[in-house]
Structure formats: C-alpha cells, structure tokens
Length: 244
Image 1 (tube, rainbow, N blue to C red):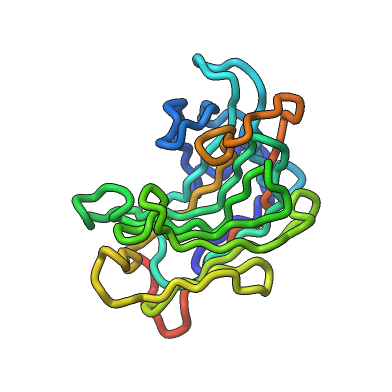
Image 2: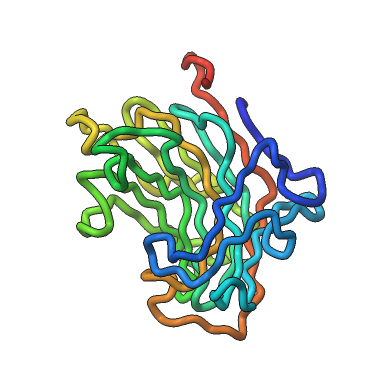
C-alpha cells in the first residue's frame, strides 16, 4: 500500500490528501450542479465514512449543489486502486469513481487524448447496473467507440461494494468486489490507444443531471442523495518502482 484514506477523522476530508474541483459550468457534460469547495453540507467525514452529498438548493445561479474531490499529489501509474462505497440513487443522480492524468502532453494535452479511466459510474434512472469504461484518442464516447462494460449490482444503493482498478504495462482490469468486469489490453500502437503509462489521480463526485445522468430528467423529490465511502486504498505492483 502506497496511499490510503480510512476516513477516521470527522470533519472536512483530509486537506493533505484531497482537493476540491469547484464550479458550476456543466463540466463538459451539461451537469446541473455547482460543485462547492470545503462546504460540509456537500463533503464531510462522519462515522468513519466520507459523505459526498448532492442537494436541491439554489447556489450561484444553479439549482443543485454537490462536491467533486480529487486526490492530491503526483498520482499513480501501475498498481491497484480500490474504493469501498455505497451509491446514491434516484432519477437524475450520476455518481462516479474515476481517474484522470496528473499531467500529460499526449495529443496536445487535451481530452480524450490524455485518457480517462472510469472505475465506476452509475446513473440513477437505471438502478442496479454498474458501468466501467475507458476513454482515449482512439476510443471515446463522443465517437461512440469507448470501451465499456456493465455489471449487475442489485443492492448498490443499499450496501457497500469494492470498486477497483488494476493497471499494468499490459492491460487495465476493472473489478466489482471479486468479479472482473472489464479488461482493456495495451494494443501497443502508441498513445492514441494507450495513454495510460502516466500517473493518474483519483476523483470522487456525485453529479446531477447531465447528458447521461439527466437523460430521463431529474426527480427533485429524491434529494438529498449521498455517496458514502468507507475507504480508498492504493497499492503498487510487486517489483514495480516506488511512486513519485
């Protein structure tokens, strides 16, 4: 293990480990929430769990608030990232556990060339279905070529499950508990299919609406909705060099 947060200190998420990405500009997905910064109503640690809570309330010209956390530091390349979480539900919610590069110049440094790894996505209008996806220059959702898989988790909104990713020089594997959901191989065709040889950081957020999460509208009667996280743990592969 090279990094972890067990969320054993109540209050704000550990500022040595987490930063906030704040704003209400839609985040490229037409999302409806405003992600706040260090606001306990939207992000806090209580009873040994990180809570990210989406709320129906006016905030800076938006009608919903939530939080989007990103891990601090240089990130990690090859190894395992696991997050034990219970998910929010209801039409219009869109929680995610995912990764973006810390720094990358592939394709000029823009998305999707730099890559994205979606360990877990969940849209509330389709309960009980977990999504795992990979995006890069060759495979991405605007082109409808992303590599993706679904996995049934009937009690995702009621019980905690481990959502994990393992990355090596050869492939990326996605897991729900002990089940491997998706494998993305390194095709060895360069950065257009494999920008994943760079350090990536972890993001945790609950979006409201958006092009996917809001595809069937938003049910305002469901709020507040929360994603709860019991722990985040990061491991390096045996024999691999230490992280930056």
